[in-house]
Length: 469
Ligand SMILES: Nc1nc2c(ncn2[C@@H]2O[C@H](COP(=O)(O)OP(=O)(O)O)[C@@H](O)[C@H]2O)c(=O)[nH]1
Ligand SMILES: [Mg+2]
Image (cartoon, rainbow, N blue to C red; front, side):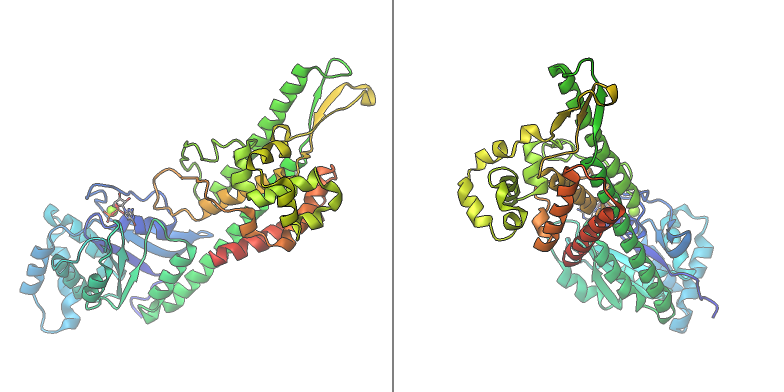
């Protein structure tokens, strides 16, 4: 067939400032698409292929908006052919005749890929009321005779989708809501599934695209969990060593060693953040410096523990199990013992931090004259809550980055209402994790099978969490 294409192409068209470029950016996973507050940001069409393993999965054209739709439709009507199947030839004739005319530059840019075979994605802002002025654009697009769909974007707070649907339904076979800022992976896939049915010829290639994207997404999650768990194990088993003058370290030496130990763990976290950003093509994302941003809530703060790691309940339970009722064992602490422990502690919120020993998150040992050396060493981390803080913070960051649309240009907001570990891990998994943490706390060398088990637990729970999300 003459217009068979190896991969589907779509031209994203519509009025200026309706979110066309944002949709292209979100669907092509490309943050380089120009998005602007002022109409006319996109002057010429640009092609944005979505590539996986250097193969194009589909290609999107970002186009300028319609400017002189009325005049164009008038021209087309003046040259109306005798039958509808010849209308696209009239559109082609319009392009050929006006190619050098700057007045129609925007329209030519947007019509060209369509008459060359691209499908049409018509974008409207359904937070504003419908108006008949859009009918001229839709009529021109209809002349092109290409498979087409309409996307309802909600830029503002109001919702006029019902009236839009009644109008758009007369011009487009498919009308879908898609928000380029908030869309997550599953929304993206659902949109593609709808697009697959626009044109029989494309069904197969879009289905292939969906499979490729799903596989890639899964790989990225696995890669993310890999780096997260590697980081956690590296940080938990980290031991800082430093030579000292005498057998007993001075207060000053101890303080300096503590600072260096903390600095290394913070550095590990920053490196992990960059690795996660890189996996999801968000390297160098701007982050907020507000009070609650991860950057500002120190890894070693009480706030970090209560926000990112464990709920109040879990803090009490795990904390108490380490200290006050250590003898009862972790099974009881993580299992049915919650009520008992809560009442034991009296739910004293203020007292929890102190009891947990937040000021003493690491335990220091001063090694004696081992091998004739005077050495001060810190680590591995003894605090029972600390692994959960690392896990909570890193999974929250992974979640935020992996769900961030490439259409977003604002700073990444990291909030305190992220999730808690108890939202992600079932009780059985938390018990298994605690067993692994206990080994690491004891200074056991992390074996391959420990690392693998840790990854399996986190991956299984995280996948279930994002699937239900
Ligand atoms: N809040 C919000 N803003 C959006 C959305 N879509 C687009 N915008 C904003 O609207 C403006 C125009 O978007 P753009 O994609 O450049 O529109 P285009 O002119 O149709 O390509 C930009 O400031 C976008 O950030 C949306 O779904 N929600
Ligand atoms: Mg644009």
